[in-house]
Image 1 (cartoon, rainbow, N blue to C red):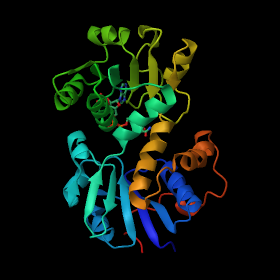
Image 2: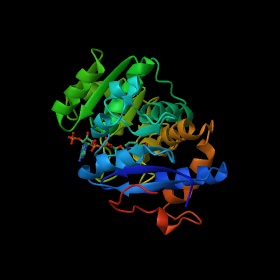
Image 3: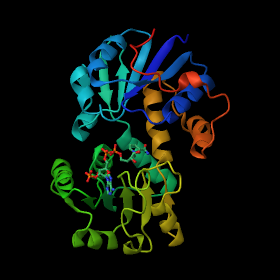
Length: 297
Ligand code: NAP
């Protein structure tokens, strides 16, 4: 059994990319630790959190539906995560305190810069979606000083709520609103932060509405090539899927837990076979989701 532990909690846990990335990085940097997948129900959250206060835990990560709910169970939440309204990572401090933070927003900003060469400062951004991921994306854009941020969402009330949360400079409209089409026509970056392309077919907006120099970032990474990205490439627009964001947000949490400055390349190499649809070499069944058991050891 490993000396140290981290875990991802959520329900349902659909993917094991996070475990594969972190376990590859623990092995590469010779750290005796294991990242586990814990598919737990809401009633098990307090017991899980009590367990990770033990010194053998580095911390844990959080996915849907617990990114907001977990905040009340922690000792502290960093300002950026509080501003976003969601915690996706938690560190156990040496004094045993559990501190929540958010790596989705910096992971997104880092990915658009490295994968698309896009700087959010001064960008005119249109974001589709108003769920948890859109909050992190919107916060990253506003925080970096984007020139404009327009949120389009299937449910317009959720877009309006996110826009209010982000501040005066942000507008929230329905995906079918003519204002969204106008914003797309002036955008330098379009971001898909909906599940469209993953669970529903088709691009969430018409790529033809974007100007010829716009870049397209799709948070979806399974499948690797969504209809949105395929349409963007046909138009010759720079386009990238969410794999870069997934890796970068993980590397930020890994650095916080271990002090390793940059595990990005190791993590990206580890999940490349998963993203291509194949299991990575040596990927053990024991690292699949384990069910609602209490934290080990
Ligand atoms: P979420 O909170 O469940 O939000 C889902 C969003 O998708 C909502 O805005 C929803 O609109 C919209 N949507 C659902 N079905 C739709 C449809 N048929 N047409 C148009 N919009 C639709 O999910 P989330 O956590 O924000 O995640 C969103 C996506 O980002 C997922 O694909 C997730 O895998 C991805 N993601 C990627 C990363 C990464 O690191 N690459 C990180 C986080 C999330 P309504 O409000 O109208 O329901």
